[in-house]
Length: 285
Image (cartoon, rainbow, N blue to C red; front, side, top):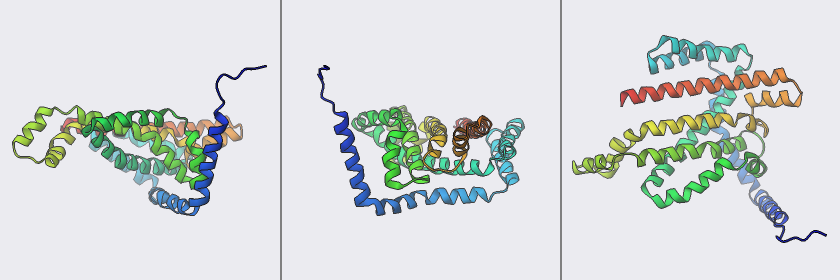
C-alpha cells in the first residue's frame, strides 16, 4: 500500500487550465478569430511581397546590402551565393514564407521589447519583476502554451507568431535594458547641464551609446525567431519547417536534410547580415 505524503495537485491543475481555456474559447472564440486574422495580416502582406520578388533581384539586393555594410566584395559575393543556394534546393517559396514570419515576429519584438527595456532601465523594481517572467518565457517548453494558443487562435500563422514572439522577446528586452544601464551617468548629467531635456538626452545620448548592445539583442532575437520555424510548422505554419516535418512524417531523411540545410542557410544569411550591420554601426559610432 502506497502512502501519499503530498496531495496530487496535477489533476486539479489540469482540470482548472482546461476549464479556463474552454471558457475563453466559448466566450471569446469569434473575437479571437478576428484578432488572429489581424495578427497575421502583416505576415501575409510581407510573404506576398517576398514571393513576388524575382530571385535575381533578391540576390542583387542581398549583395548590395552586404557590400554597403562592409565594403568587401568577397563578403558580398558570399552572401549572394546563399539565396542562390535556396533557389537551387527548390525551397525558395518556403524560405520566403519563413522569412516573412521571422520578419514580422522580430518587428513585434522590437515594438514591445524596446519600451519594456527602457522602462526596466528607468525603474529597477520593474526590471526585477520582469526578470523571472523572461526566465519563464525562455525555459518553458513552447508546446505548453502552443496548445491553448492554437485552441484560441486556430492553427496556422497566428499561434506560430505568438510562440515566436514569446521565445524571441526576452533577449532583446534584456539587452536593451542592459545597454541603457551601461550608459555613463556622467555623460547624461553633463548633457542635461548643457540644457538638454530628458527626452532629448535619451534620443541623442543614451540610445546611441546603448545601440551596440541593443543591436546584439536584435541579432539574438532574429536567431531565436528562426529557431522556432520547425515548431511553427507543427501547428500549421507554412515554411521551411514544414519540409522538415514532412520528412519526419514520411521517414524521408533526404527531405528532412534538405529542409534542415535550408534553415541553416537562412540562419547564416540573417546572422552574417546582422553582424555586418552591427559592425557598420560600431564603426560609425
